[in-house]
Length: 474
Image 1 (cartoon, rainbow, N blue to C red):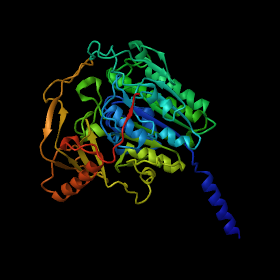
Image 2: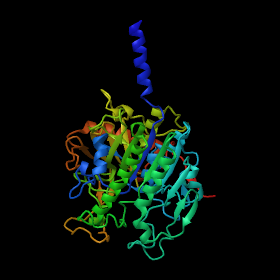
Image 3: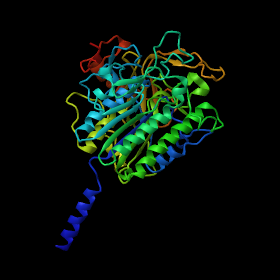
Image 4: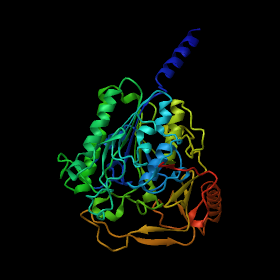
């Protein structure tokens, strides 16, 4: 009897330490490369707050976005779908008349089932018309800019008259019709202040905070408190301020006793915009950057922390993609998934380092441009097939761009499928298609199956049977 009583007490205590409704904080960077954090190999500056997050949590070194560009990438994270499945391609401009459809379920709408307070802070970029803004997609409040900070008349690379004023939006109305260069220097601080305020206001109930920084996307701006602080130029200064922001969020959680029951996810929307040179980050050993389906475009830093649930001080090289975040959250909090098909799968065993954990996907598809299937990767992250397509690359031998003025890319074409073993060649430097024809054939079969669902404009295949329409302006 004593044994049974003790065992019952143990079970009760075990259950009580696991909350089905953890607070969830997603910090999503803009154009931050794989090697832009010191815990991922950054050179010349330190990111101590993010490094601490990694040391107290788990690093994911094979974490990917679905597409290497802003709007598409954010769509994948928030809906758990390949962005072309839901009709979002590329980066939506200020004049776009479409955005995320009202029928799509976002992470905010998933957690709403469990009574979460929800907030989006920062860059949205899933449609700038009122029906596409965060309050229409499960968020209780919003503060930020509706599209990218370079879609702005003050951007040195903007053609005259190409962009309207860049507004600041609070909830569903404009609070500042025109953001100025001075306003841009305050963006990181303002986003951080709003985020901390949301945490403080909702400390007594479960909450979901989606903080989508505008930095380190060009044009770069930094506040006076970090200007020149790195001694390594403007990009490093901006990274120091972003690191400070992460520290402020974590301090707010600690201050209110929320740290132990908060799941923090930190990542970026794509790799570095390499043509901007000194104003861009680094993909480290990875090939190419933003705007390509090479590893430098889609593989980004991933860090997750939840004390007692995610093993601290550990690293995972298992492949995951941002499409897996929504279904994993839904599983953890026991919320329902949408009735329509999504592409992500529950990867909680990988996140927690469970014995024998394996990625549940047979493959991942990398689309880009207007529904071009450009690459296929095996679910275990080892084999990657680059399919015939054109991509942009920097011409060799040119000096690094400086002053925020980019170098022009050149177009490079792949004529035949190229196979890479990412376990031994993360830089995608050696095409091994001839040596491993069986792997090529296997990945080609996966390519055929996803084309049937989503189409492939490179082969002039129409949108497939699984494609859905984006939301359209009435």
